Image (cartoon, rainbow, N blue to C red; front, side, top):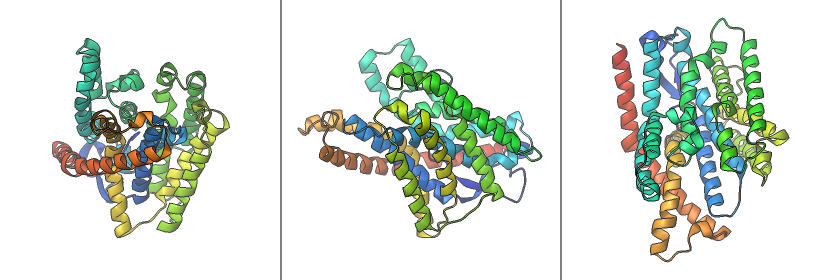
Length: 391
């Protein structure tokens, strides 16, 4: 959520170049980019479908699982740039940076911390309470596991992306420098090209050699493998604010375009995970991520369509994090007690579809409840607290 999942994608207020908080800490105050809400939802469900098919030994749609998360990084960079570019361009103080990190931390931590705690009984049963487990708990609750080995240190499925995402929050003001007023836009192109080269060099020395083992994937899942996605998202956010390359489209054409581009990701899938990260497939899919985010940002929705998109965006983070708990709860707790065939051992499309449908429906309901009655109140309080502390 990736990533990241379920940001409040809001346009920064035009009334003040520095936002509405002193010290350059801009706050989100106006409308949402509904196309990004929809795309974020598509990505969350794509990752869930990838997991459900893989865990049930039916199919390995690596492009859905990998690039569904990578798109979160692009969307995160774009939405954060829309929110904060004006404020940070006016000057970055330690106080403003602290407020920014506090708000972002409070956006991610409530649900993540709850699920980390829910995972503890399984961790304790498997290996007991050890110094290593204590270290993992602390690093997860502070997101510092992003500096180590996010894939192996995350306590829950998909949590690795949040550790890397929080590092991008720390680096965010640096990413904005090439986009600041008065800086030649050539520098943004140079930085993006350099990060893209770094990304594929990193893949070449890690995942391209061994993308199916834990050591190979662990070495790959580090900041250099995803920085181009985040910075590319920052550039797209800047283009959106400046109305550069703007080409608004209606709901039908917009959704058709998203569906067509999404189909390309599926068609370019390969049974070998290495092939979707490396070579011509890897480069094509990487660049398609930026095209897809730019295209989704052009979609114009109103009325019922806008409300639906908002709800889809709201549940994205929950869908991304909760679906593994629902699936494994169904697999190891519910299924044995009602004499069902364990889903992980089925390998059957009919079983996979039935189990998948149940998991996605239950997950969506839990994600909606979490957003409405748990995450949103905490997020609203943290934003209000940050504003008050700035006065």
